[in-house]
Length: 311
Picture 1 (cartoon, rainbow, N blue to C red):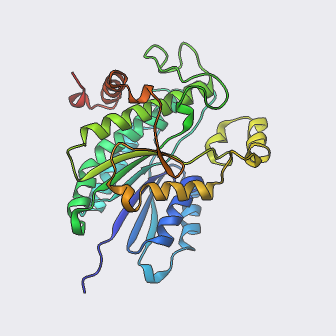
Picture 2 (cartoon, rainbow, N blue to C red):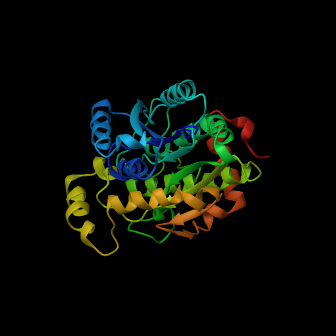
């Protein structure tokens, strides 16, 4: 009997939080799975990999590793994609765009983009474009031709009227926070831009049976590392108060919800927004074709993909 082909799962971040729990679910539920974490901090990545290895049953032939990836650098994104392309000639099968941050002071990256927007949206969009060929190869070489999957980790904060604070208010004039900067507003804008481009990307792939693109909001998870750049008062509030309210969920539950979104029959879906464990709808603005055209074109130009711009 032939040995089952190894399936490669690539997760941005993943050394802690939701991404870690997702990786744990893969490693304890699959066989012949290889999980690759894209992480900026080597020490934290080493610790995450070491912890995940404790969950691997040797009989499963599963493995986990990390490769360097700094989403605040487009150069690093290209290097990460090149590394994967060389390492996995038989392709990859799942890309989960999990990493994210919320920076509360206006900071520009080496590429001259606002930090939240580059890390949460631009770099992960770029990574998707760079890895699409590898995802197609993975599908082609999988018995039965099962589609590869790209999954965006979303947030209900991309919808107006959810959570606290104003927004989203996505405009070209304030895309870098130069007109008005407020951490929550900018974060909301990044998640809206991400949701918009998920739908636009899914539309471009609707006739491509080899890759499906979806998004999932795993719920309100106060204990993630997203708040690492917040003040002490905010961190204490999230960890000790908001984590105990009925609307909150744990990183363990959130990671399982993301796993469900990339598993089973959900792998055959395209352009779907999952909220927790159910098919739902993203915001009205994210589904607006005109808004999709505007922000798809801006994103493509910003990441060097002008050839993908819509007329």
